[in-house]
Amino acid sequence: MKRLVLCAAFTAIAFAVPATAQQAPVQPAPVTRTPIGKTEVPGSNYEVITAMVTIQPGFKAGRHNHPGTVQAQVLEGEFMIQFDGEPEKIFKAGQSLEVPNQAIHNEGALGSVPAKLIAVYVVEKGKPLVNPIK
Image 1 (cartoon, rainbow, N blue to C red):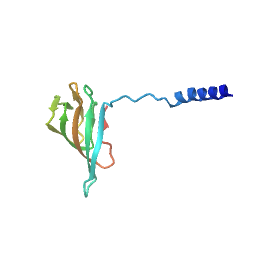
Image 2: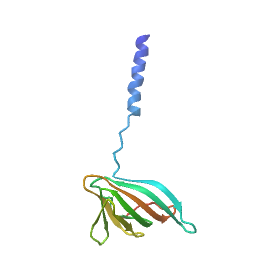
Image 3: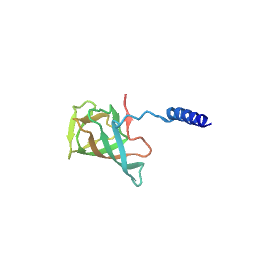
Image 4: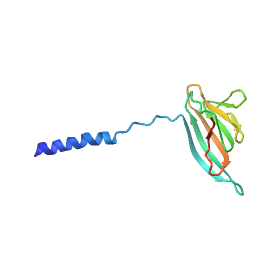
């Protein structure tokens, strides 16, 4: 009887482990936008979203735009931005930048450490913060 119970227990464990084992997601994500505040603009269809943005070193986000204006302050690392038809610009900790409404651009982190920014998005309500452009 003990053998039967032990055999059943080992069998249950053997089948349970593969069912619950999951592959860990890729960490860290190349870009994270962590909202830290959100306020509606009275009398308009806009809202202000403040977020901590982290871009991993060497990663470029690809061409995209935002449904409104973005104001950002670089906290750490080096941040690269390139608007369509313009040369690449580099911003370091302590510098700020603005992304005009719907401006198509690419952005990324240079160097060996993540670029960290505080970004303030003034965007149309209900729209995604980022629109990829092909």
